[in-house]
Length: 148
Image: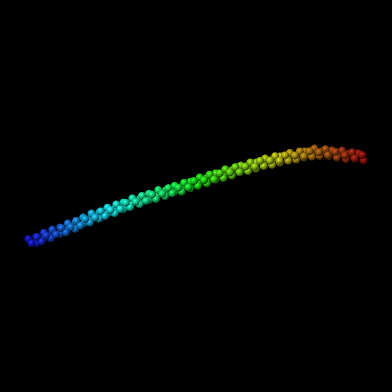
């Protein structure tokens, strides 16, 4: 009986110890789970904070890129307009040069045509005068030869 009581006492103590250990384990598990929950909440809070920070940085970066893009677009439009203006002015200058060249060509053609006409008239006149001069010379030569 005494052994049974000792065994029972030991069992009770052991069960109390186990219960205490279980309670300690349970308490530790609860504390750990609370700590993990707190860590999870901290991690979640940190994740949300990082996500918000990333989102804010992304928005600011996208606005900066949009601003840079708008600046680039503005610069591109400005350069395109400048190029277009230069092209128009250059084409007008070339057209003016072409018109000047065309005017000069027409003037030179008219001058050449006038010179050609005058030269041909002169040649025609010389050609007309040549037979006259030849016949006159022939007459003079024949007159002198007859008189001799």
